Length: 270
Image 1 (cartoon, rainbow, N blue to C red):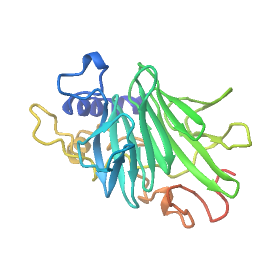
Image 2 (image 1 turned 45 degrees about the vertical axis):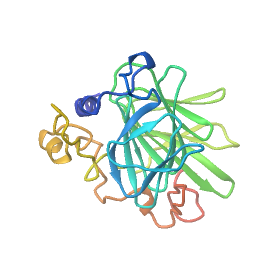
Image 3 (image 1 turned 90 degrees about the horizontal axis):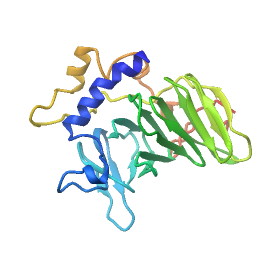
């Protein structure tokens, strides 16, 4: 709970400075597309957004994210998106499809690589975080989803660090407490395992400057860190002491999929 309150203020201010989170269709201001579901708030390297039947868009800071976008990061790239006051951080060589649930909450489906979702809210509709055929119900969580590869095929891992995370797959339901992961393999029931040591970084030097918005707060990393608030500081939110990501592990084979561990093991959780 303490960590959640530390990240709540800057994220909400950031949403207000960018014009607020996505609203219901009848609340959208004139001239604003109802399909806009978020904004780019952190960016490093080449990141594109793909939509069926359209030319891919190279994303820049503060660009809109539309319903149906597939966000794709290249090698050594990363992107942060704020949607519904929820922050999603997509790692290198990753793909994330963005949609809406029936309740108009964010629907995030990992199609490759890794994503971290930080939700500072205490109430509201649950955000759906899916990987393969497993999905977590996010509300007030600090969760990550990964796709791994092994000889028998792909499998998903959904981890949690802040609050219990319910994960469902068809008629199965498992809850990951902080420090635990739910493993979803095709021919096995959902099961729990200890969380790994590596984390996807929260925004750092690649956080977007907000620019000359009237009355907008200064939420550059240096300013926020000086105040000791926000996703750029605080327990459990910084990069690891080595500054490494799962793709730095020898034999990770990060080519659209993330595999943690020596070559051939398929990760540390087998």
